[in-house]
Length: 590
Ligand code: MG
Ligand code: MG
Image (cartoon, rainbow, N blue to C red):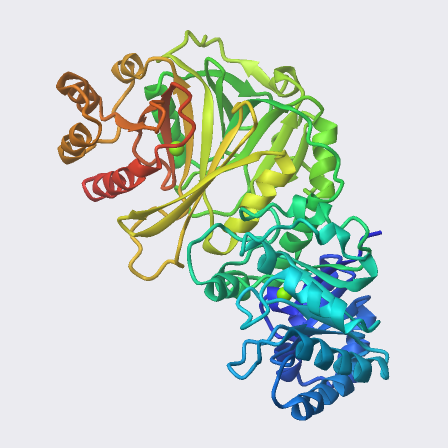
């Protein structure tokens, strides 16, 4: 049984907030950061009893710095004695010693081994063990294999290794040989993911660590090499956003990241995007009706008992729900649910539950069909249906027949802006719960700030999801649409579609002048794009995206029409600033 642990530094708050969050998320124990203890009014003994009350073990106390190969061994040992006393009171039995960054440290492995053995000896007398960790920026010792050579040379039973995935994977050093370390010499394993960044590794570590599955490191490979290790798996994630976000949510996000690394029920195949539902009111409802009508949709179904409408075109289905109770500003619309066709809806639900998808109240409001449903981090609902028959039974035909409208064939993707605090959480949630693959992460300068976008999809690209977030928290000057949501439909002929639909978002001529220069497109092609306000992107292998947008409806929602050719697999992120500025201009002139 894996013991799951989280470092107190991962979450926001004072020590009591952190412990409560770790316990509520189901962790078995913690790594206690010294600073969290120092600022706590509780004595170490009180911390111990608080942890015991919460069912948390204190697996590790950290950090102890600049010890090995020091010219002042007596003073260093005296410092350690103080930690041992604190640890005895805490009931913590493992001390993390990270490799020295001191300018005084000597480049002498024999001396390092000798001093660490002496430290381990002093610790052993108190029933304490020393876990030695190579910091990626350690002065002389900065790789796992170097720390292992020293630990092996010291040859003391109370001295072992702490292996931290960040320090190891950030240096791209080889993992070969990790599997040969005797398991009893690995005292502790810390897990952190991170995005690939070219920057100083200390800054990278302090600000940009992520929970497993949120970054780019191959943690499955790392863990696969530690098959015989049976100590705690501990998350040690320094992240600027997590440090100031709701600790309870962060702790759940953290736990989900560990669960997703382990054996969770397999994700059933997702076969189609069944429908997207928007919650509307008396003002935004008619706006969206008109918009859908303009895009060639037909109001084909009316709910048996609720003010809920089904609009269709090809395999594109939109539900307008006036009975959703989600609190929102009058006149606004927002995505309240989306439904995916699953090969095994019940199993999709079991997996979601295993990954801590928040439980939904049993009353399903207007949706009476028995669909498996889970709550997404933004409060919307994800439904899993077996086929269209599951949910269509709720609707009576209006008599209006979908005749294919403007040639929209199916849902291409959902674009969901995330609140600043919850972007990485949302990414891990959708990726793990739905079993999606992470595509690229893009960053771009937009009119109202820097944006990051990260996309996820099924292997066959039947389901695509693009999440965006502002890189910095919004300030007072923030005229952008707050957390916009968009639904993109596919067409096989965007020019024919554009000809058939109502007004779309105007795109400035400057964009087309630039397009001509960037892609060496024929003048007549550019003119055709310009006439319809179609944006263009091309990938390195010649795949093309042609796409256009509608204005914003209900204060928050807009639609996109896309035509992909040649295997184009992105979302036209380079055009997002153009769209955002155009939406701003449209608002100012309306
Ligand atoms: Mg560490
Ligand atoms: Mg899009």
